[in-house]
Length: 84
Image (cartoon, rainbow, N blue to C red):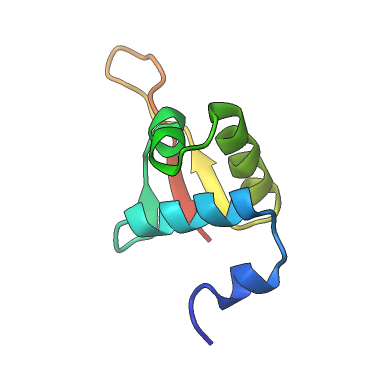
């Protein structure tokens, strides 16, 4: 069974599959990446709202985990995403 077989079989909306595959492509060997919503939207030619919806649905479905990241000054930066 290939890596993407499970996500294809899950019958997720195409936006969720596209965002998941994008995150998989960007992930390091530990399955983590941290692109911003703006970057994902630009690279996939999707709206930011569509990317946010896909990320939320992937989290709810147990495909990814989002973890907030913080700058040294305490402000929030892009999330770190871990593929599950």
